[in-house]
Image (cartoon, rainbow, N blue to C red; front, top):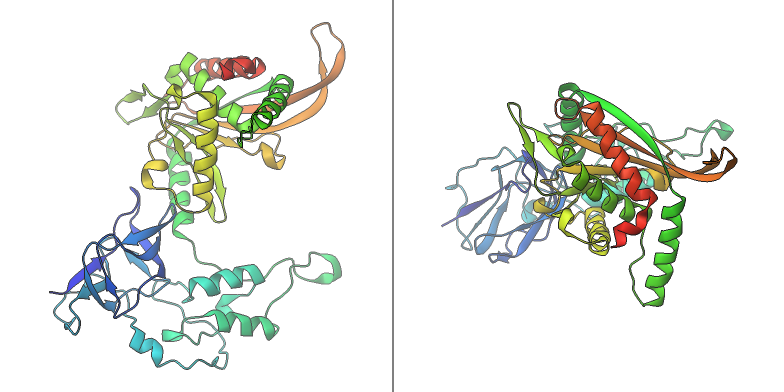
Length: 409
């Protein structure tokens, strides 16, 4: 009996997904647990596994299609079985290998504009989209020669060769700095937009900032990395590793900051599930180091690197980026000296970390001497955290970072 394959909810906040890539085609046999496709969610691109065995009779959602959760994406059954008996729960257009064979392999004559789906999304294959982004091709002006007018690789390459690409050469010579065009909002960017608008408009933010003497931290980090290298360890410690561990220790001293707003109550968390921001090409994600309060410095450093790598590869699982109780956002590695971050609801606070800057400072004896300073800014939800509490947290954080040896104990 034919069965539908529907779009699963691959993340807690997912309402729809984009079929990024099919690993199977009509006529292929599948078995439970086998990866049949890749789905772009609001957080990452994740593998879609089969739950039933059989033969793929119909692909109802071609690559690039946006499908709501529980919407039909394919049908599986016995070879030769009719699909008409299976009800359709998704408006996604069907696309089969037979249809694909009707398209000639030569590029069509370019038309004035690309084919746009009913959702407003330009019909383009993932590979063609990637090449277009790299080459600066305006896909809204490219005619597709693929199934249903979909833009494929050869169309982008033909458009590039035909002079439709404008060089991002900057202001010199009067050339444009980038290609004009409109790109659809990705699932991730749409989710970020919703959450940040919600956070900024419903949580009363306030900000507390301090500078920390970063010289002791820099000295300890350098010596620790030398020791690790001499011991044959592949781990290389970053400033962010020290900040993550220091944040955990500061939360241990001021635990009320490790809380969440729940409308009619405030939840005090007994464990620190430490989130940290990782930049992605189309947004950011916050992997979570679970039970960070119970982990030593090297464990936190290793997990941060492993989770960061998985985040950039789009391979994080939902349990690896949900449930954080406090977040650290660090832009110091790109030279940003200070900034204020937006809260990650329902968390009550987030720490923004700036770059270490060399500057003249006043020593305890009144002399002006060379120094190294790093900016730390806490954004807090005033419904949960008051100014004094945020100040106490920053005071504890500064004390730990200025005596960083305690982090290695």
